[in-house]
Image 1 (cartoon, rainbow, N blue to C red):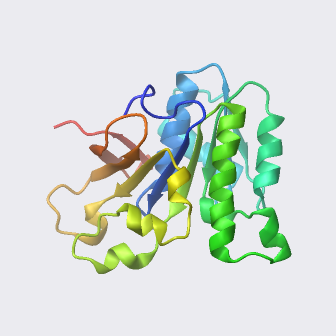
Image 2 (image 1 turned 90 degrees about the horizontal axis):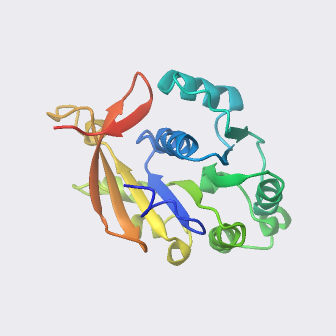
Length: 224
């Protein structure tokens, strides 16, 4: 992946996978990459980890960088409206990363007038609109259902993402994470991960091999 074909201004990017695949780790890797290659602020909104946990992970994985332009919000309850207001009030904003999609709410959910499908549909659509209006990439992690684990080949597909009731058509890019070692302890390449680009409005699709480093809780490009 390179920044010219991914993370374009106005794009809505989703990183999806089952638990323990490394979605949050990849999101932080992306934040670090964007921060190093931009003078703009990169905002991480975490609904799962605390600010201290995120900064600890960043320092553990990238202790050579000061992260001065990485900002973290760890409010436990967020809506699309509060996220949009936070982004609008963040000066020199270059990108926002949200971890993760199923943990925050639409305004309608708070009044309990929508179904879960309608809520997730609205959230995805509003995030895409926010990306376009602010002219920044909005990168969001998403949990997948257990359906993919019922197959012999457990690599995720777009249909698995649709099963989580998110609005797939508004997404510009979809990245799936898969680590075979999680399901097959005897796999010969235990630290390999697959970054599966399943949808990309701005470029190619395909699979990129990554190396998973459990000590640093981070990914790097696979080198043969």
